Image (cartoon, rainbow, N blue to C red; front, side, top):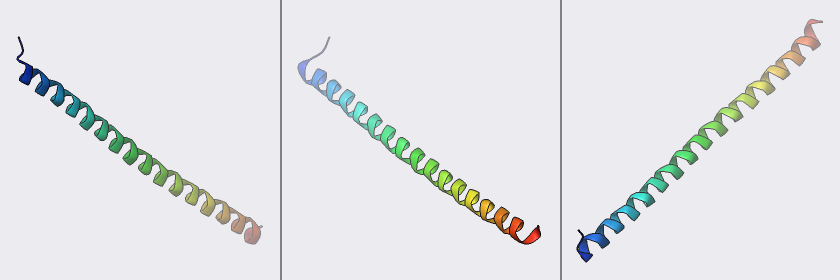
Length: 62
């Protein structure tokens, strides 16, 4: 059995909880995507270095 004031307050707190969880979700997604992008960039850099190294190896060793 709710009084009007407490019911409105509970709805507001529910909405606030949903908003905060959405913000948490957004931050998590942004952090993960930034982390993955960094890993991908590092991987591409390593691949380029490896490719250049192999070209150098082929040019001078054989």
